[in-house]
Every structure is written in C-alpha cells, then in structure tokens.
Image (cartoon, rainbow, N blue to C red; front, side, top):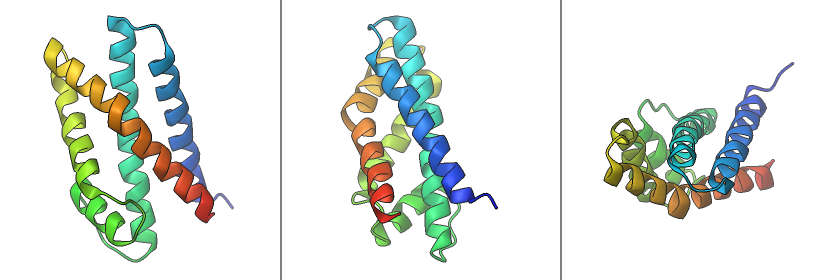
Length: 128
C-alpha cells in the first residue's frame, strides 16, 4: 500500500531539489523567473504537506493561514508569521513582470523560504 504522506514528502523533496538547482544556476532574468516558478510550486506543495500533517493529527483546516497557525500549535513549524510572509510573497508572484516585485520575491526565496523549507523537511525526516 502506498503511504500518501510519503508520496507528498517525496514530491516536496523533489521540488526542493529543483528550487536549489534553479538558485544555483548563473544569475539571469531566465534563472530568476525559473526560481520564482520553482518557489510557487514548492510553496504549494509545502503548505499542502503541512495541511496533511495537521489533519493527520485531527485538525480541520482549509486555508494556508489556518494551516500555518495549526502547524505552529502542533509544533511542526516554529514561526507562523514567517510562513504568512512567504504566503504574501507567493501571492505577489502573479506580478513578477514588475522588476521590483520580482526582485523582492527572489530575495525572499533566497533569504527565507529555502531555510524554512529545509527546516520543515529535515524536522519531518527526524520524526520519521
């Protein structure tokens, strides 16, 4: 029988690896666009993975913000405010044709999302 949580985690790890690859490529407009696209995909997988984790613990949540609050309550993440900030960055990605917005989102990915995602997947691995 296929463990759905393991499948979700593997998808998230694969997306994380692609995001790291995009960030490691030589800096260019195309590299930045690829990184932002990888972030969008990775963020979606991350919040849905967190949703599955908190629902597995018996919580009922629907929105990303509710998921982050509940994940913090369960001790899965430390700082829901960080994840709220990442959600705002994710919501800005539809406006990345504006140079300043694209630069802001890219910086958030580099400075905050990569680390937060690493903590999430590493912490979950430790608990497995």
